[in-house]
Image (tube, rainbow, N blue to C red):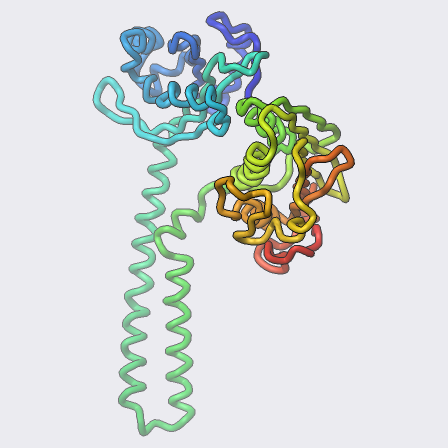
Length: 381
């Protein structure tokens, strides 16, 4: 979430914002949510998109049908959903082709976020536009190379495979040592063909050589986004977070999903208008993100099974649901080497605690040795 009380047509931080955005050749834009018109667009828009700021403002002023309309498409729906209490689309990333005035197209990636004022209301849409044409071309080249390489290796291997099968079928009178050599050749050929499928397929080769993005997420950002979604749903929220690391290893969208499951449950099973309490702290060599409500809590008979697949407690009667939310959330957290637990706080209500290792060395193996989500007595990691 981006919170700013100073977003207006005269942006005091526009120069710094433009400089940061253009360090990597990106464009920045600020769209006023009230008027629907751009308050700021980086000067480089002419070079990337072929339109000037004047062109963009003129076209959008005539009903929003202009080049920038595609960049901020869906804004009215995002604002409507936010007003209805859905904070899941505060930040959106899209990739599409944008047509220039000369008829050519440029592939762009657009990252946008709603900036809220002190009252928590959307004031502006902030966005970055990145030209991904070169990246797409590299991907196409890698796929063409992978296809060629796969073909060049597969053709002789297929020849060897066919020859050895013929030798095996016709060599019934060969001695055992010779037949064993045939089997070894056939096995080695099968292994090489399997390696082609696994490592030299066009899809696999397209991934090789591309820059690997680090999977990192800021724990404080996760909490702030959770608070924003709770407030968008009309709940008062407190936030306590101190001494948190700047980043943790993790897949951001997966962890956001796990936290959203906890928030949805808190909203669903507690009286409307009651407060929620969000906290972040260092615990046991890691970081604990906690969400506490002021409801009736989980019944004692249900505590041992609330993370089971498909299980719904006695208090869920008459409330829509599948019983998969907490199971899925715990599965996501365990893949990250963490744990998701339930606690009965002294203040009452229900508290769910999501623990993650603070360093890579503290994480469990993501492929093996991992506690199953069906095991309610698994260790933290």
